[in-house]
Length: 169
View 1 (cartoon, rainbow, N blue to C red):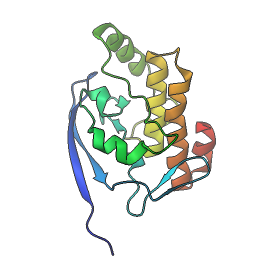
View 2 (view 1 turned 180 degrees about the horizontal axis):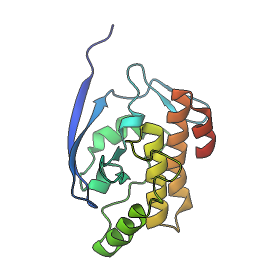
View 3 (view 1 turned 90 degrees about the vertical axis):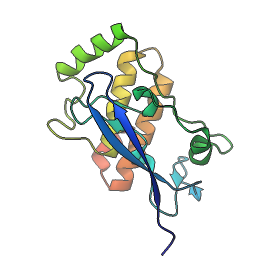
View 4 (view 1 turned 180 degrees about the vertical axis):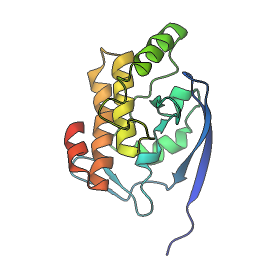
């Protein structure tokens, strides 16, 4: 048994509905290896599903920057930076006009359609929801949205959810 895993607790406030909630991220260090699709592998707990956060009220989903919280650069280096790697592109807090459009879109139910309706989403689903929001806000950047789907497929594969893994691919 290895040393206890330390966690960082983030306090986040949803920019859409103003709900405050906490999210914990394990501090696990560098990956021990990679799968053939470049998915990082960790010796202890896998942090990938915890790196993206969903508001428990409205399901707005983003990396911590999407909640106005800066990421620790050392954290990024440990998780993503190996030759050929790059971190996923987080979106920053949208301006008020985009937030209002996003609120309307989420209230219509388009965000959670066919996924996580009436419950909190789990890791792989959070990446899909984050991708949908990213596409809504930045519809001209399919390459960056693909990062969200790729990480969603990694998390779904880890859980054995073949259907969601295929949806993300």
